[in-house]
Length: 197
Image (cartoon, rainbow, N blue to C red; front, side, top):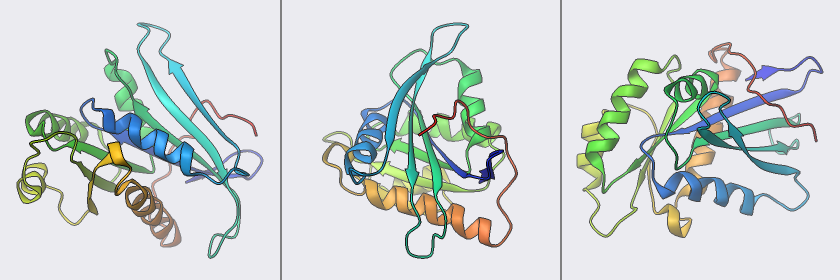
């Protein structure tokens, strides 16, 4: 997590994995579940070279419980387009936590993207979302083993029904806050663009 010039704290999460509807379901779940008084904006950010794009949701999380200050939350996800690999790498590099979204019916694609994440990633903080996106998903134990999740949180979801998505976002934010408290969160550039609220 980083502070901007005004001192506001920013938390950046990136949804990463092979294209699936789960990426969009997760963002929709987040924007729909935020309390109405929380400002929020979902935008499509277009790459200026080839026209590929990613989705970005930003909101402000006010102080609550142990959280003593407002946090500007950024959540980005690649979405349904031909992807410029530079965008993938940049979104992972800017993330405090990467949420790896694995469609359980497309395990071969998930394994391929897991290798790409290992090659591109500079952060040890991951949450694995194992999504039941089809009628014939691979067994959870097989997916965990194939993706080499280690000790990272690993959450089964059915994102099209909203099941488990809240647990994924909670696990990601808890990882970031715990690491920040211990002074272990890597310094990284602020996500851009920053939407003023």
